[in-house]
Length: 202
Image (cartoon, rainbow, N blue to C red; front, top):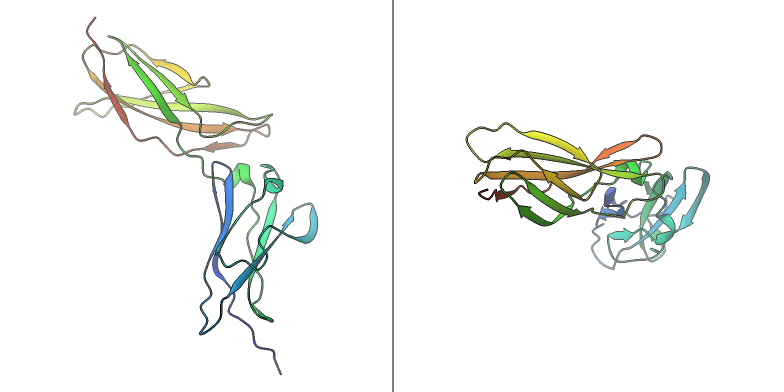
C-alpha cells in the first residue's frame, strides 16, 4: 500500500531584494491539523542537503541566514510540508546566485541643491558593495515641458551635478544603480521615482 502523502508546497521561489533573500511558497491546505514546513539548502560545489534555520516552521517564508550571504555562490533550496509523521515530496528551486538574481532597489536621494544652471544631488546607495564590485549610477534628466527629450549621465560618485541647465526651469531626474562585479557581470537596478526641482535665477 502506498503511504499517504501531503500535497507539496506550490509557488516555491527565492525573493531577493538588495541582497536580502528569503524562500517563499504558498501554504498547503489540509482539513485538520497544522501543516509545518522544513527547508534545506545545498551549494553548487557540494552536493549535500543541509538544514537551514527553518525546520518544522509554521510560516511560509524562510529568511536566509548570514552563512548564505555569499553573493557569488550558487545555492539550491528545497522545502516540504509535514503533518505529524506524514510529509510531502520535496520541491526544489532553480539555482540561485545573489549577484545575478537579486533585485537592486533605487538609491535614496538625500538632498538636491539648486543653482541657476545646475542641480547638485546627493544619494545613498541601496546596499554596500563588496570587494571586487563597484556601483555606477545612471541618471536620466529632462526639462519638465511638453518635450520629453531625456539626457543621460553615468557616474560612480554619490555626489554629482547635472549641469548646463536653463535658469528658472523645472527639471526632473531619476537615478538607478548598476552593480558591476569582478567578473564583468552587470546588474541594473530599479529606477527611483522622478524628482523635480526648479533652477534659480542667476
